[in-house]
Amino acid sequence: MLDRLVNLEPIPLALLIILSGFFLIHLVYYLVFFLRLAIYKGPVRGQTGKGISVVICAHNEYNNLKTNLPLILDQDYPEFEVVVVNHASDDETSYLLSDMQREYPRLSSLEIQEDLNFFSGKKFPLAIGIKSAKYDRVLLTDADCKPSSRNWITQMQSAYSNGIKIVLGFSPYTRSKGLLNKLIRFDTAHVGTQYLSYALAGLPYMGVGRNLSYLKSVFYDNKGFIPHYRIRSGDDDLFINMVAKKSNTAVVVDPDSFTLSEPKQTFGHWMTQKRRHITTATHYRFMHKFLLGTYSFVLFFYYSLFVLMLALGYSIVPVIGLFVLRMAFQYLILSRCFKKLNEKDLILFIPLLEIVLLLLNTGIGITNLFRRPTKWK
Image 1 (tube, rainbow, N blue to C red):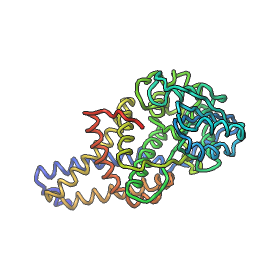
Image 2 (cartoon, rainbow, N blue to C red):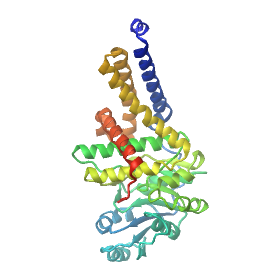
Image 3 (cartoon, helix red, strand yellow):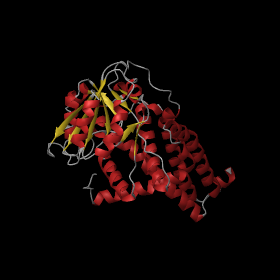
């Protein structure tokens, strides 16, 4: 192989060097970031007996609340309340909450009759819910989410120790048949691997509102959603991007700590959701955008250069060798991450789903340059 490399023409050799550089950059990401989640044993256990306020915003969520609220109210935790903010619903949500309050003393509800535009999206009702919370620790989820176990609250609160003010959880989508379901769950697991790994490396940059906890005092000390109130989304990731740091953030990945929700049922609805997320990411801090952007940039040009060199017949043996070596690292590390995130059935399809997702994200990024999404739900 060494003889072949020495005898390469200048252009194939230059391309091979560039491809090797891309490989090494990704190897750094896997070893510096993703490996942390792969070998993570869990946070130092803190105090779990303190009171907690679960805050949920709901807009026309009668069916989801009827199914999921009892699972949340039945949590095995000594002291907690559930606050539901009914935001301008025109279904039977109000009656459902009234009936459930008679059965569950822990449940309280707030009614917002009109869709006020102090903030965009659900930031206004969420801010009202947090303000009304009885306890300093708040745990956020959505009406369409259900806890994976009766220990959800206990697991999420176990990470609060000295100095910890923010706890990042994971929220996978339910499993069903079909390529779309696998693609959505792969995307969620890959994003989860990224933000949880970065947090473990001391660079927390986002959380998901389907399973996220922080102190009420942190919310007020940082003026809540006011710094980005004009942005329609970002009630979870932009707030965490603004306030989270190495010293105040912990991660929980125990399967009992997850919340589950149903994925989008059509490709179009999922694309609308992804366009929103990608648009929001443009407001992250520079370092986070640089690291995330470099990873995607390198991945795109790694695959492009790999295909180009194979098509032209350049350095086929070392090119395939680099590809196999990268795949080996990918399986070794990502498989452990996906097992922690309870997505073991996706491991076999990692290379294929990565390529499909890369093409989709590239297309969305180009589309968003010319036309910002206006529909958010």
